[in-house]
Amino acid sequence: MKSLLRKVDVPSAVGAAGLVITALYAYWATGLEPFTGLAYIAVGMPVVLLAGVAVIGGAPDPRDNDTPRAGEITLRSVLPWLVLLFVAAGLEGLGLALGGRSTTLPTLSTVIDHALAWHPVRFVLFCGWLAVGGGPVVRMYRRWVRPRSPAGG
Image (cartoon, rainbow, N blue to C red):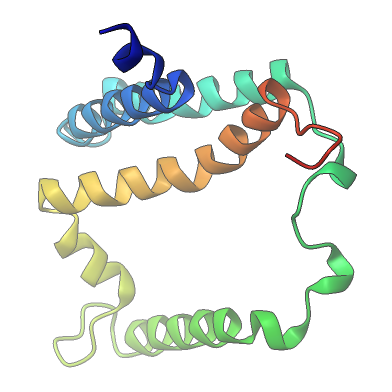
């Protein structure tokens, strides 16, 4: 029995519990009536929590991580994202020029409005929003709690 307990990686267990709690929170928050005080608080709480963790954890030394430096980012590496951004902006502009609620060319905002009517879609998008905002803070916290050894391990 003792050997089984030793094999449990505590940070992994805490991370898994954190993911479950975050998913439950996201499901609850996306079920609230939009544009109410409680909905605003539910959306703002992760922002406040992650900002607090970031402030308490402090900024990591940029020389210690493996993120690309500004010199390593090229136009070629970001070109697919720029094309996607310009296509989306162009379609949105064209749809708005045709009257906003065109039946032949819906705007991105019209498509999103219809998609957000479903709770599962709101849940997935909210989880994605939490992952994008929380990912850097979690990586920073991991470096702060478990720094790399000088031997590279």
